[in-house]
Image (cartoon, rainbow, N blue to C red):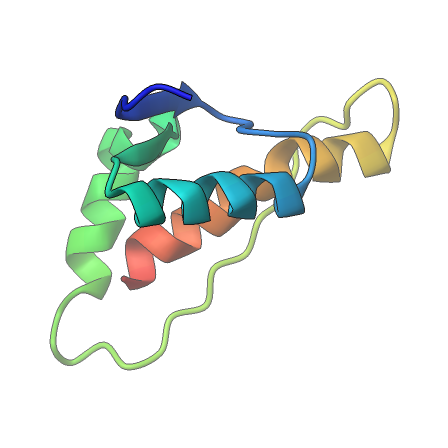
Length: 94
């Protein structure tokens, strides 16, 4: 393994355990290991983040509604979009 900072497109790996191992290795080696999620920088998401960051906001409920279901079904739709929802919540909530 080389001493290199890494910037990857989502989805990072096919299992959460493998992703955790990569993140732990990066921490141990003091490398940057970043996953790119383009939705984080969408103008609407940035507006929402600014809005819910107000000091008087104490609770925020976010609901995801799919307009289209993946041709393979609901399971595939959920799996394909799951990582984006987690990243969105982590980004919005700190």
